[in-house]
Length: 334
Image (cartoon, rainbow, N blue to C red; front, side, top):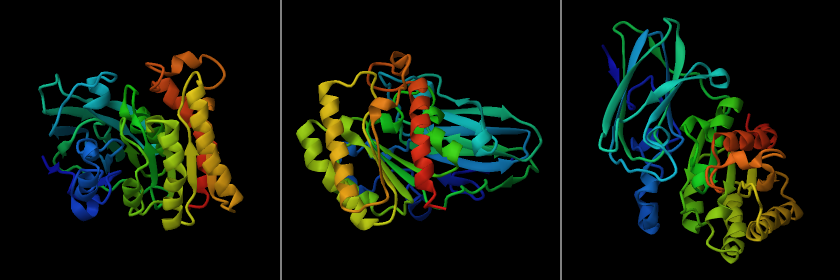
């Protein structure tokens, strides 16, 4: 039975910057990590990354080999260290299962899936928390394996922010708000969420500027150590991105939260000030979403695991609020 690695066509890897060029499963270059050493581990893992293909194989096996494996206080093995699979075209894709280690000592694990003999699209979402050595797919002898349907939009959207952006703390990586929106609206994306470590550094803006992106979304206010730090970095970060990408749509957001405390409100005003200044300067392709609106009007307390990180309901409600704005942004990306 033939086996395909991530480097074998017709499999297509998405969400890993410069994968086609460098053949590396990392988010950040060594040069960036040298300048931001606190991102040494975070920059070498690939939340949001996917590999996709179409096959008529009635059975296929997915094998995952990890380089690292560490427990996460707020997320399970299924959420952090496992690969998740969806079957079908993106907007109507259905969840078919998880490929998971049996414990925190198992770096190599696999699972065999059954499907119909029809030619169907398979999407494998990479584990969120770990550095990945390899993901292999084995299909039946004689099975057809072809490339997946291309995304509707040619260039990916880049999301930059905190652990929330990175997917904390949904029970399944397919339920992070960026992943949900990607399926709903059929766009590729890069997840540049860095747990506790998104500080709006100029080095990060410069690296993001090297990506051929179609739109940019950022919401790192939660990781700014103080309101003063956010005020010092937020507008310069925007201006750095805008200077390199004068025409792309840019969305600024603030953190999701059930209760917006005074500190949250102060940070929101910093982000809103960046937006207002851009609009006043004539920028017609900039957007703002108030994170206090993410959880809706009722049962807001059901949307988080700890008062900070969204659970699956929280991410779903975030995606619903973000969707109309993102649809407007995507109009300029066709």
